[in-house]
Length: 304
Image: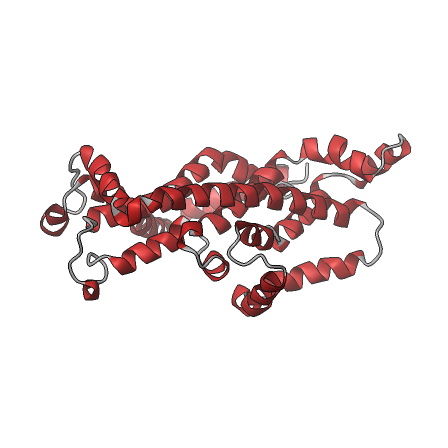
């Protein structure tokens, strides 16, 4: 802890001695903060306005709160209100994946750290290799496997494949190997704990920051996941929000003028509301869990 305070004092002194450098650093950070925040503000404000207001008035102007209700009602006209089904699919698909992936990744990291299984190093290297393989390269094998198992167009196929979480397993391995002393494992085993009891009674109560971090990354990676559900779930009633929104964008002249006029009242405010439905849960989850995220990312980085 003393070394960390010393580094902070040194960085503060450097900023004080170099005001020009501090100015450019702050300007750089402010620029990217504005670039990131302004589009999100526009997205939140767009459903409150009409199609004409979006084209003719200040883009950051607030319209009417009832615009959200009107835009949602208009979205219900698209394919008999299937957007509600897409939203429910996204919620329960992602929730199932987060629970399964968090539990299995935490268990895998614990096993790689505390158990005496053979080929532990081989498993760890295999996890790293899996992290490096682009998801696009696994499309054909995953498709063939799910087809052979007769799981195509079934939600379980997406849940099973997405629950494979090599990054989470490696993150758990780092956490358990750096934050929990090996002496604690040895003491528990002397007291008669087996590996499963060691995980439940010793490691799990101490891994709150890790669990939060695993759940957050699993949620972020799967809530907006487009490609895998698109490949494995061809039926429109099984679509998640990202896939459904892509289908909606393609089917409305607000985004695709080649479609021509339709009887469905879906314009730019409705498209913006659809974007809010995808982006807002990620923002809420981040704001709720940011403190635990920081704590989890810093676990093991400070040696007292």
